[in-house]
Amino acid sequence: MKNNIYMDHAATTYIKKDVLDAMIPYLTQYYANPSAIYNMSNTLKIAIDEAKEEIADFIGGEPEEIFFTSGGTEGDNWAIKGVAYGNESKGRHIITSSIEHPAVLNSCKYLEQKGFEITFLPVDKIGRIDLKKLEESIRKDTILVSIMTANNEIGTIQDIKSIGEICRSHKVLFHTDAVQALGQTHINVREMNIDLMTMAAHKIYGPKGIGALYIKKGTKIDNLLHGGSQERGKRAGTENLAAIVGFQKAISLLKENGEEENKRIEKLRDKFIKGLLQIEGTKINGALGDDRLKGNINVSFKNIDGDLLLMLLDNEGICASAGSACSAGAAYASHVLLALGLDKKLSKKTIRFTLGAKNTEEEIEFVLKKLKKILN
Image 1 (cartoon, rainbow, N blue to C red):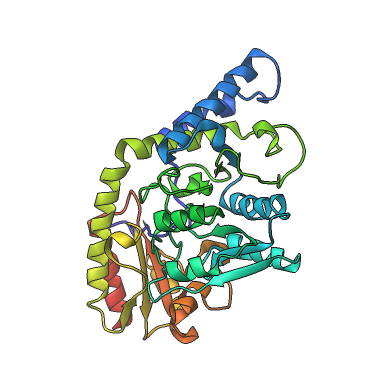
Image 2 (cartoon, rainbow, N blue to C red):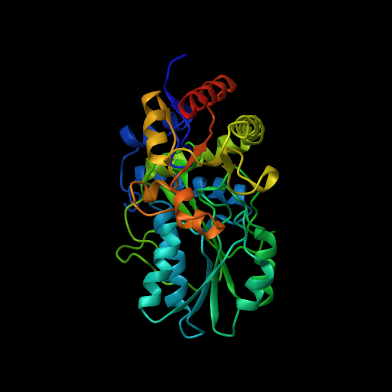
C-alpha cells in the first residue's frame, strides 16, 4: 500500500476533478470583472445568479438570501458583528456556546471589549447544549443566538431545529456555523428557523477562499466590508468567479451522490471507532451514531502524547490532526475538550481523524495496525 493516507478532511478537502473542470473556463476564458457593462460580464453575472440558485435550493433558502464571502471565518465575523451593530438599539446581549469555532468565539470576545455582553453556554459530556439553559439565558436585550450545527473537533451535531424554534418564539435572531455540517447532515433553513448560516466550499471538495453567508430576507445586519456595490451592496469586493462556480459544482455533486457517499464514510467511521476501542487506554470523545458527523473520530490515548503520536503517524504517511486546523500549533489544550470535562493532560493526548471521499476500508485497517504497533 502507498503510505499517503489523508484523514484530516475536517481541516480541508481536495478539489474534485469535476469542480476543477468547472472552474477552469472562468480562469482562462471568462475572466472579466462581473461589474463591467460589456457582454462577457453579463455572462459572469448569470453564472453568479445560477450559483446562488444551486446553493439556495440545497439549503432551502432563496437565491437573494445567499451572499458570497471569502470563507467560514469571514461569514462568522459578518454574521455576529453585523447583527450586533445592526441591532444595537434593541440590545447588546448575545448567546453562544463554549465549544464554537474560534471565528465565533473571538468575534464574541471582540464584542465584549466593545461593551456587548456574551453568555457562553456550557455543554454536556458529548458536547450538546442544554435547551432549557438556552431558553433561560434569553433576555429582553438578547439580539442573537449563535450555535454551530456540528462541532469541528468532536463531530457532535446540535439539535438545530429545536434551537431555532426557541429563538423564533422569543423573536431572537439565530445564526449557525454550518461549515463542518454542510453535506454531512440535513439542513433546511426554513424548517429549522435559521436566520443566518455560514458555509465554506473547501470542506465539501470545493476551492479554498470562497464561502457564503445565508441571510434570511428582512434580517437587519450591518456590512462588514465597505467599498463597491457588489452582492447587492452588502459585501464589497470583486467576485471570485472561478471559486463561486467551483462552490456551485461542489454543491451539485452533493445533491447527486452525497447521501450515498455519506453512508459509505459512516460505515468506515464506525469500523474505525470499533477498532480503536479495542486498543487499551482509548476514549472516544463526542456523540455517537446519528448525532455525530459521518467522518469524525476524536480519540484520546492515555498512554501517549498527542503531538508525538501525530509525528509518528506522519512518519508512516498518515495525516491526522490535534483538533481545529485554525488553532493548530497552539500550545494550549483544546477549549472543546476542556468543555466536555476532559482534563488538560488527557486533552493533549487527543487526536482527530476525519474521513472523506477517497478513504477506504483497507486504509482504516492499515491505520489501526500502525496505531497498535506504536502504542504497544
